[in-house]
Amino acid sequence: MKFYSLNRQAPLVDFETATVLGQAPDKGLYFPEYIPQFAYTVQQLKVLPADELAWQVMQPYAGDCIPEVELRRIAAESISFPFPLVKLTNRISTLELFHGPTLAFKDVGARFMSRCLGYFNRHNSRLVTVLVATSGDTGGAVANGFEGVEGVEVIILYPSGKVSPVQELQLTTCGHNITALEVNGVFDDCQAMVKQAFMDADLTGRYQLTSANSINVARWLPQQLYYLLAWQQWQYDMPPVICVPSGNFGNICAGMLAAKSGMPAHHFIAACNANDVIPHYLLTGLMKQQVAIATISNAMDVALPSNFVRILEMYDNNKVALRANLSGASITDDATRQTIKRVYTETGYTLDPHGAVGYLALHQYLQAIPGTKGYFLETAHPVKFPEVVEQMTGKAPGVPEIVKPLLLKEKRSIRLAASYDAFKQWILAR
Image (cartoon, rainbow, N blue to C red):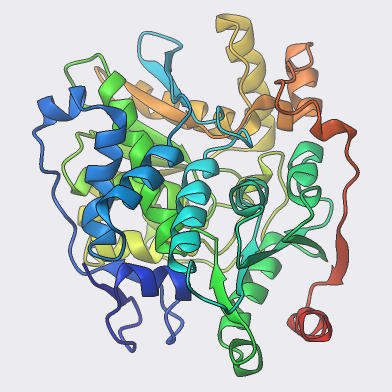
């Protein structure tokens, strides 16, 4: 398998090179030269052991870059925790993706990528520097996945005051080879700084840089796995409507890729908060300019979703074909709060704000299309958003055992202005 840049001004590369580079030299995102079809029938996919399923999905992308025994280990370790599909109503279920080490869906991609990079760097004497921008959960997942990996350092940029307390502790308390930069800006500032760093000859000449955001194929592609694990648990004859709380659009892009490879799916919904650039595009065909808006579903506070270009590529930029498979929804903070309250009152289930956005967007779609059923992704544990959850349910979310030691730690971060010059000056002065 080779990967090409979506800007089409860079050479084809293999999986290892795409992973190590993160972004192509022409500033484009890497995309597989073809979309592999699953080797199993839909019925066989239902009963395939999870570890075998994970290896089968990832093998065509990795190709000869990773030996079978190593790829099987990496794939198995990336899904070594539960992914339950929980029924809430007769028509709505939720896929819980918060049972990993940092209680967020990004644990899968972060674990897969860290292990791939560790393997690729096993004989390399040069330090690999991983740059990652986070709007909430990516930073913690990457910090956990890469902590202690030999030959790799991680630099995390996050917007000051715009991540939850637990999220901040997860990305600022690792130490060792993990450094957290607290940027006085928004996520888009952090993401722009990371992207510019890859184009800066002063930095690329001095550091071996790569990215751990979902722009990296090793972060993006393994997110297909939990959609297939959900399919194994789907109990209805009809394919599901799948609703994904969406920020940078890597998650929903992975799900749509799995569907292109043969996974049954009736329709996808990109559930967004007030940052509605993509829902607006799907309705009008126009990509508006917008500055990121802070919301209570902070991991989705992204005005310029990087991965949407991959979705467009999947559909050959055919807007009609895309709209037949993807809808968008924009949910306000007030509606998010009321959904948390209503679902808790009616079902006893506690949603986090991102899950609430997903629930309401799915509910609205199913109401308009009789006879359909679906699931939404619950992408983070409610304990990460204690204030809004307790306000709307009257009860503080339970604290998982894995979080309790974290609450006793003290954050360690470096404050930074929201400018690339400030970041460059800091990294060169170390």
